[in-house]
Amino acid sequence: LYFSAQEGILIFYHIKELQYEIKICADISQPISRLIFSPDYTSLLLVTDQGTVYSYKPAHSGEAVKLLDTSSSCFLAADFLTPGNNYCVSVTISGEVQVWSLEDGTFLSKLNLGIEVHVT
Image (cartoon, rainbow, N blue to C red; front, side):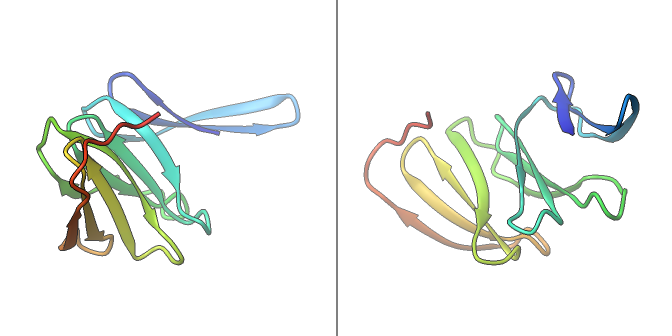
């Protein structure tokens, strides 16, 4: 079970029968608004309200890697662009959809929807 604390800490609870172990996986020092697993569960996106997206690979138990920083108060959400685990898509309140490489955080493309967007 993965969850985030308000301070921006990614925590893992390993539960086996009646025993459990707690492990702090990453500290990104920004409140995490969403945790999103890739379709094959090999990567986890950590999304902040400030528009920063980090990648964490549970099998490697390393630190979270900053993929992109939109530094935008208009940032709403991000998710994996499927199929595969190579790209991520983000959206802003103004309706701009952006595609990013998960390998190095490179901005690849954008599409303006021309309408205001809301996340529910």
